[in-house]
Length: 239
Figure 1 (tube, one colour):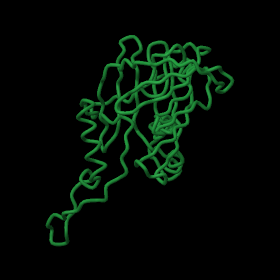
Figure 2: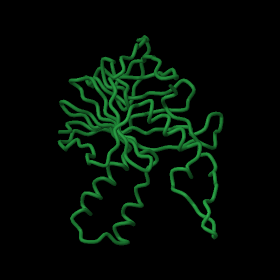
Figure 3: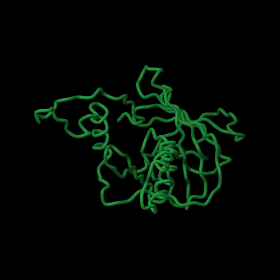
Figure 4: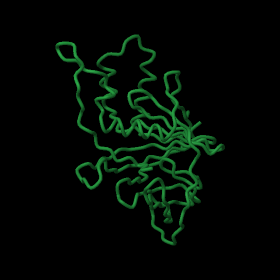
């Protein structure tokens, strides 16, 4: 069961040194006794709608229009197993892939600086993770060991987190106590993999998305050799 949820705004850059590639979205962090879940808020809304639609005999334009109102920029979902200190990540590239990792043990440098965020006195800390340096602001007034994505390990909830290059910036924008289920999509079509293999697959997809959309053929039946334009790619995890 979900006991608390926190909403974070994320400003991110999809291409290095390109200010026109800036994007914004909202993530939700659901925290229960044994598990937490971090996903784009619109993923949660779409999953809720799909669950409601599953009981319908047919899904028409009305339902499709409802889904279209919740556009998703990332289908990545992370579930933290708090007791076993493991993370289960699901993401979608044509198919749904999932892999499990140990929760990283981050080395935090606590800094004697403070400021107020949403009425909470917050303190500063810095760390390094997967190719980027980060600055976090956390509040001991919210004694929850958690934060955006994999980040945790401070004496209070992380309210703000930014990479020093400014390419990923999370800021808390709201919170609520609410009892609800924390769930993860489970079916026999999900492909189990490893983090490294998925990163290679993801990079290949962004380099040549056409390869993942099936073959195309000329009018004479011969296979059309095409390569679509590479998509902008600047993942949070660089290694």
